[in-house]
Image: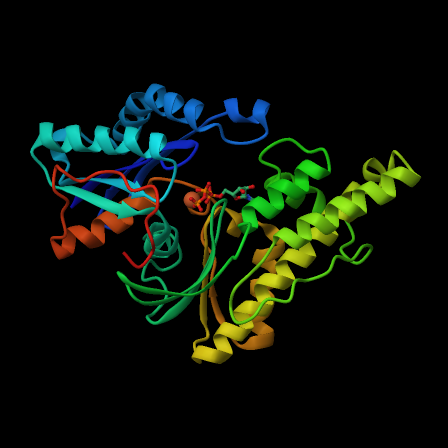
Length: 338
Ligand code: ATP
Ligand code: FE
């Protein structure tokens, strides 16, 4: 089974070719334009997708050494995401499937962040055994999900305000770092001491999260310290980043422990762009020892947005014969549970 997958939910245009669960190619075109604006500008994103999609798909097919007539189906991200961005991938996938007379498969982007664990070259390819807990941490989401089966997922907890990726990006912005700042906070954190500064952890009931308070306390911290010494951030950047990263990691791991106790499940998978974070990856590995968990951490390229993860979901749906109609439309708000 050969699947061409297309992802265009936010600011990365991506296409991948999978043979079964094996990724033959996974091409990602990242949009640089948003850096200037300090965040994703939806109008510019959808225009950039239009420019990128044809070359990206061609490149994915070429790299996979696959002729489009060999494709069994076309999978695409239906949502959630930015409407204008989603529309580009959706229309492209629909026309291609129609032109090739192959089935069309719609994919939920957040399910894909979780099911990326089943990509063949990622570990043993079997992925975690069901049921497992997934922590999806990305630019738009922060969720603890009970995954009973490929398409049977239940949200146990989620953020009440900012997503954890936003928390990283907004903290970075307060420190004067360019967008998206998450990876930069990570980079400096690796060279800093996490115990120099401390930030309060929010008290949120149950398995939900909140990150807006952290952002505010970082803002006050920066204002207070730079009033005393204008070069404070420059001098302490690494330690500040390490301290912020430690706080965020602590918030996430505390809730995971709670979720694991509550459900009795000790198979824990992470997914989404923020699971590229070195502090979070390390904390999870540590929890294998401390908590006796079996943890699943995706390869870097399958953490941030990519079409390979859309392709693996497409593969499972293909096996089920779960195909979309040509009348299917993009869905900006699309829950993980359908
Ligand atoms: P969603 O999946 O919720 O629709 P998205 O697709 O925009 O959102 P992803 O591409 O999955 O989000 O993740 C992007 C986010 O991950 C950004 O906020 C980025 O800063 C963050 N991120 C990426 N790498 C790291 C890292 N090493 N440390 C911290 N944050 C990171
Ligand atoms: Fe994403």
